Image 1 (spheres, rainbow, N blue to C red):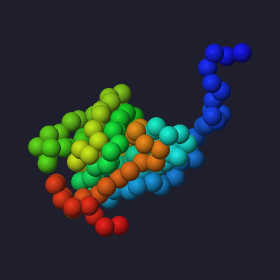
Image 2 (tube, rainbow, N blue to C red):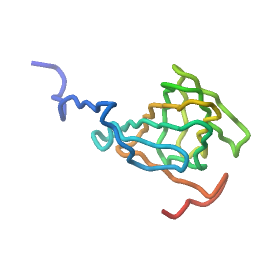
Image 3 (cartoon, rainbow, N blue to C red):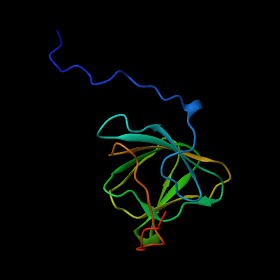
Image 4 (cartoon, one colour):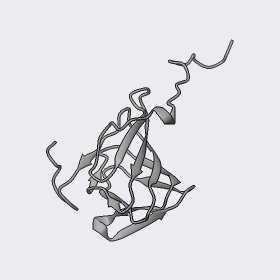
Amino acid sequence: MPSHPEPSQPVFLAKGSALTTSGGQTAGMARQNAIVDRCDGLCATRMVAPPRSASAVHHHGPQDTVVYAVAGRGSVVSEAGAKKVDLEPGDYALIPAFAEHQEVNDGDEDVVWVIVRSGRVPEVVNLTGWGGEPVKE
């Protein structure tokens, strides 16, 4: 008999080939739900940014966000546009809760990131600009 509680659900598999665009969207890129609404503490999505694109300025409310760069070379712009962090395949970045930011792909190939957030369902708050008001959906 195990010395730990039984799992609340079985192992879940989200096939990458079956992901479709869904979840909170930001202009300029596609977010695809992978593991969403499956457990209380986190969710995972895939983000694809086409060449020469940029997202709207946004934040993720109270959710911390971990980014893992899978393909392409992209950037996270923050601090009202004053700071730019470049990611290449294999890199990780942490975007703190409520941090306004923008994803940018200045390259000639798709940027693909795996995104894990500290919430059951991903939260996206698009803004009218740096320090701006939330965009009414």
